[in-house]
Image (cartoon, rainbow, N blue to C red; front, top):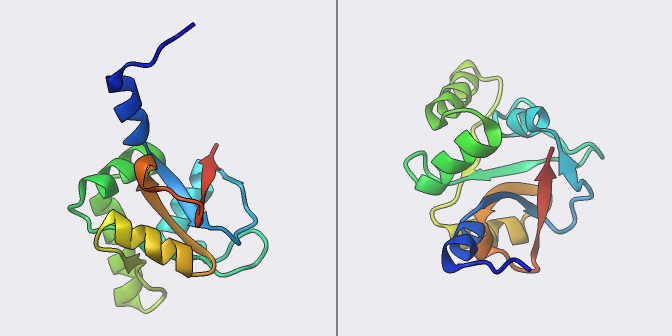
Length: 132
């Protein structure tokens, strides 16, 4: 029998996970597809529904952790990709959430929404999407 200590529990809660609106049918995404969605190169879910991407500010520690740990890129690399699309007129940047509770609210109320949260902020209004 393994007993989780406080450090394990808090590490688990602070894990940053990919989160979507409950109506999104997709349950799993590859890292490459997830990266394409957050780089705003892919604009729809596999079933054709439009993706509405939400991110925290570039300086937010959870944004940095998500970009590095889940996408394998640095936040400034994402920002460069967004800036390039906006300035060239070929796309737009994701929508910004100000805090994790704000992110939760936006993900819960926006059909097709995709974002990320630490596990402690999850509730039954959103779903976790696995990254393979």
